[in-house]
Amino acid sequence: MRVLLNFRSGFAGLREGFEALGHEVVENRWAADVAGIDLCVGDFVDCTRNLRRTLSHARALRSARVPFIALNRDARWHRGVHPFRLGLVSALAPLDGYATNSQQEGRRFSRRTLYCPNAARESVYRVTL
Image (cartoon, rainbow, N blue to C red; front, top):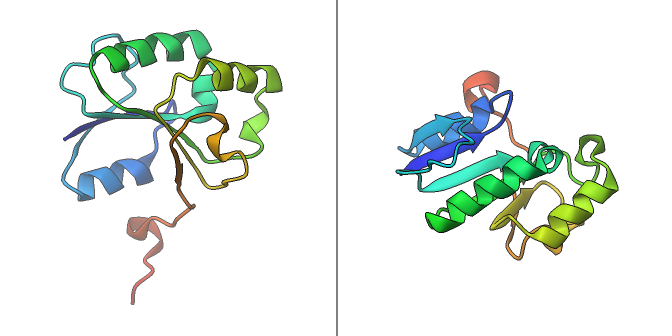
C-alpha cells in the first residue's frame, strides 16, 4: 500500500510507523495526480490554513477513491487556527476521517473520528531494556 503523508515539516514518527508495517510512504504531494496512492494523511492545521489547496486535493482524492484523513496533534487548540476557518472545514466537510488525541470535538470535522493518542517513537526513546 502507498501512503501519502502531507505534513509541511514531515512527520518522522508516522512515516516510520507506516514503513514498519510494510507500506511505501510518499511525502508532501498536493498535486492533483494521486495515481497509485491508497491513503492520504495530512496535517489538520495545515489543511485548515490552506483551505483552497485542501479542497482541490480532497476532490482529486475523492475522484480516485482515496481516503483523506487529517491528523490533529493539537486538538482542541488547533495551533491558533481562527475559529472561522474551523467552521469552514466543518461546513465544507472535505475530510473522510479526523484523527486526534482529544475526542472533545470528535465529529465536528468528519463523520469518522479516530482516537490517535500521542506516543513515543521507539527508535528515539528506547522504551525497552
